Image 1 (tube, rainbow, N blue to C red):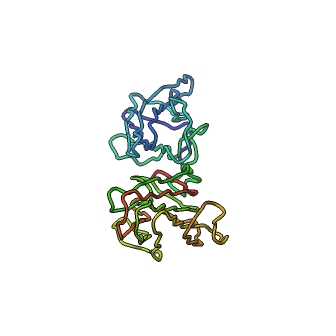
Image 2 (image 1 turned 135 degrees about the horizontal axis):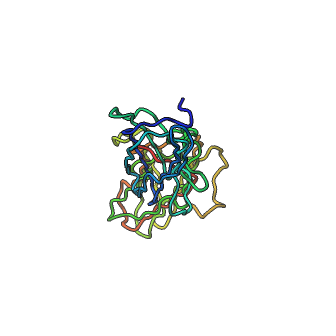
Image 3 (image 1 turned 120 degrees about the vertical axis):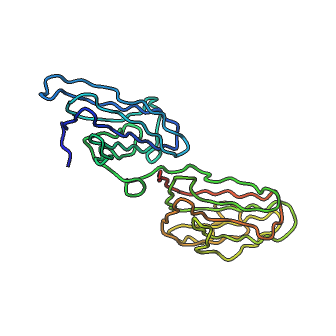
Length: 269
């Protein structure tokens, strides 16, 4: 275990990495002392614009003289509200010319919580604690042409934990009996499970409820013509996995789907 203060030699290099689903400007600072601990100073070692597309942004800092490190931290330079699970920070140390082998920092950055060393190192995803809860509606979509397909799932480099879902399919006034197929697909498009097809007709609503308790048909929540209620425990949707809703009859180009619920999201590589 690395203790503080920590001895650094000229040529040691830090690899600073961030991953964010929000555009944030990050500020890495450190407190150093000379080898005898008499002179202490703070130094900004990097300013980094984290990408807002969940890709990795990285930079390096090379130590130019022997010294000790007392602490290092990363903060949000813009000081905007950041939800937990949206920005993840990693810092590695390479001693001399070797590859990075010390993990200094691994933690989420969010409002009033700044990753720092010494500190606790956490993992991305559920292992790192609670994530960001998505706001309703999670999905709002209309058909593109008559070929109606809606995929419900995490964007690139994100992991979802689905606590509960309400999927509402609203059939337009277009005449015809739809055949609504609901399928869980993996990252290769292979079906894992499916539900029996629902068949709303013109101007009807078809609802699917996924919850951990059964409460019976929920006509009191919203007008509904067809409803299916499924008892589920919270489940993971890894990157590339999705729930696909499709009208295999391709009746109307103006049908619509809205998805509501409680979904927890984390960044992931």
